[in-house]
Structure formats: structure tokens, C-alpha cells
Image (cartoon, rainbow, N blue to C red; front, side, top):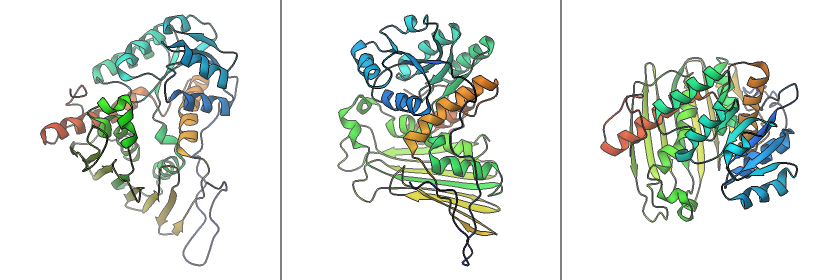
Length: 366
């Protein structure tokens, strides 16, 4: 995307787009050492974000040390390499742990890190059990530590700008959120994700449930209905067609996904309020145009960055700023539990066809 600040005024009802702080914020002082646990497929994105922001990665850990050594050579040659995360936690240079491992092992690693006095950034989805998630949150509070979740879509430029616009009241009270996704997720057929029954609604869908919660200001949904289907000819084993409808006290939200779209891929989000509408659309999740419609006319911000670049920089930066200022952080695990409760309810609804109330489903079904 081209980097500039806002659209120029014109005589056709357009006006300069509001300047909003949608880009990741940096800490003002020295950044503590980071230790990455898990050097799988997503790990390079984490390390690229730290390298770009100038954040020191002091140690890498993986049960297959060769993977950690390969990433060390590429990104942080001075970092230590460990095959046991407990050894990394004894490295005095590590003050913040980035837990980029799968959910089955993640909770126990997070607990170990918190008990060792380390702040933690958890890969998403945070946990598969809400009660276990609350235990970890309470442990972090007891230890005086920050526990954050890597919900990186929040800092994708278009979503971040939209969130800021809604939070500042530019759309007024939100009445509806409509999100539609048409992309090809069949690449997962050749990966371990192919065994994940709830790939669409849980592993990928948690981004969208989390975004809905953000647009709704954290308000809790009354109930959610969801369904999934296999698409004709899809290669991946899990169903790649999914939709969910969420009812809020004074609003509605809907999510429609087709992960088997071979041609004409696109993503579109529409947030309607009683004072304005903000829309984002484009051929993929990096190339998006945002338009704000209000009584003042139409504004189109020209945004810089892309999802994976800004997203991963945003999650780690938000945590580091919270550590520096000892403040509440936007990607806190406690807030993320609301998104997971919505997601779990949707997955449960997709299994029996009945609407569910968030928080009534305490664990990821199955």
C-alpha cells in the first residue's frame, strides 16, 4: 500500500480522512529481552516483526533444535538456542516469552513462564478451555505480570483504522457488523491443520470473532448460531464453508466464510452505526480500501502497511508498551476470553444446529 496520511478534499462530498493512530506504537525506553518458544511455520513472522522494530530476541527454543538454529542464523545470530523451554526460562536475559506453539502444549508452557516471572505473549487461539484460561489470567495477576494474546488481525491497517474510528464515535452506536471472506484455504490439506475439525470457525475464525467483539466495544452477545459445510471439490478435510450470526442487545453481527474460493477472492467488512458507516473491501486481507461515510461526506484514508507486517509488530509492541508503562493492554488475555467464549458457542452451535449463549460452552467442543 502507498504510504500517505489522508485523501484530499474535493467538491463531490468527500473530505479529508480523520488522522487516527492505527499503526503499532513503540515503547519509549529500552526493550527487555524476548524468548521465542516454538520455531514452526509462523515463527519467522514473529522474528521478522521483532527485527523490524529493533526488539532484542535473546533466545529461541524448539524440541527440534535444528529449527531454532536455522532461525537464529537468519534473524538473531547472538541468540541462545534451547530444546527445553524450562532451560530458556532460566536465561536471565529473557524477560518476555513469546509462546508460538500449538494449543495442546501452550497452556502448560504459559504457566511455567508465568511462574518463572516472565511476561507472556500467547499465540492464538489462546486456550481451548475458558476455565483454564481464567486460571492463567489469575496467575499472571498474582505474579504482577502481563499476559497477552497474539490476535494480530487487530493491527492489520484496515481493521485497526476501522476499530479506531468506531472507538472514537465516528460511526455512532454500532447497529450491525457484516464480515464476508472468500479465499482459498485448501493449502492446509498438506499441513497438520488438515486434522483440525473446526479449522474454519476456531483456528481461523477466532480472528473474526475477536474483531466483532472489538467493533462491539466488548459487549457480550446474547446468543450465536453457526453452521459449517464441505464445499464441492475442496481438498482440505475440514469443512471450509461456515457462517455465524451473533445477536447483541441492540445490534447484530454476521460472519460468512468460503475457504474454497478458487477465483474472485475477496474480503469485505461493513460496520454500520447510527451516525455513519465504515467499509473495508479488497481482493485479499492485505489489499483493502477503507471508506468512511458520515453526514460530512465520504472519506477514504490511504493506509500504509499490511496484515502480517503490522499485525505481528502490533501484538508484541502492545505488550511491551504495557510492560513499560504498567498499563492495561488492548490484547489482554482476559479480554480475549470474551472472543473465545463467542467462538466456542459458534462451534457448539455448528455441531447440533441450536443457538448457543456465549460462556455456556466452557470448552472447545470435542
